[in-house]
Amino acid sequence: MTHPLPSPTAPLKIGTRGSPLALAQAHETRDRLAAAFDLPHEAFEVVVIKTTGDDRGMIAADRPLKEIGNKGLFTKEIEEALTAGGIDIAVHSMKDMPTEQPEGLVLDTYLPREDPRDAFISPRSAGLAELGPGTVVGTSSLRRRAQLLYRRPDLEVVEFRGNVQTRLRKLSEGVAEATFLAMAGLNRLAMQDVPATAMDTADMLPAIAQGAIGIERRGDDTRVADMLAAIHDAETGQRLAAERAFLVALDGSCETPIAGLAEIEGGTLHLRGEVLRPDGSEALSDARSCPVEDGAEMGRAMGLEMRERAGPGFFDWLR
Image 1: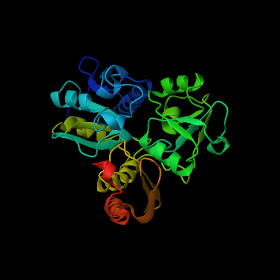
Image 2: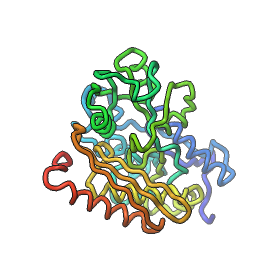
Image 3: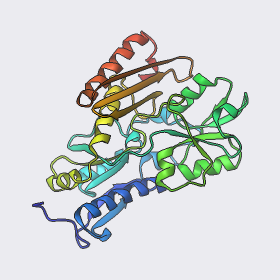
Image 4: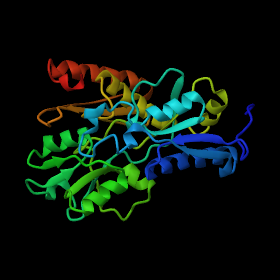
């Protein structure tokens, strides 16, 4: 590498949100970079940045994120710091990321993807099938809400927001009988004691890019680009290219009832996608396969054709 490496006196600054899960993801990024270049942890500085989505004073806990403008809620301030040079890289949960980056920023590095499935969490029930009619289930995800109401319209779904620890506390207090978290988050936080059951993706298709960590940089920072290339996971990038192309074609975001999962076997990429009305009254789904290198184009085509199948009115909620 021709550029000078970070050092304890000139550390690489890693920007992140301050939740325990966000910090775990930033530390994983730091650890992988340190190992790749044989550097001490002191050669990296984790910088916590508060985002609009973290400001509980501005966002009422009982208001769905969609109502307050979801795009960039968890990324805007971090990207502003990156653009201004206050940090060198930004670490994001990819399911939070808008499909377009601000001018001058590049998102092309992904760490190996964790388990993308949703986790059913309940202190008293082992699975969704055990919940009786009228049982209260909490979730802040418009996707999970729509999927639940589509498959179990007899359940009562309530707003249930906060970080992993906050939602588990609400569950223990009896605000709801059950909730859902990402398996990836539980695994990264080593929370094996949580009463979690992984949902079969045939029953609950996950959010686009769920379980993946993305690392954003300035487009003209060649030193950082060279460093990040050493920890990029190509397969995760290929899977996300297909999923996010599907999302773009549907004009969706991280808080719309759209689900998708790409998986790779040999040289073949398999993509499943689903889009639902927010009230769960209707769902459309599709599944396709193609050579890995054609994944993004297939995802785009699948999204466009799904819009055509839906017909006028189905996607009014996206506007």
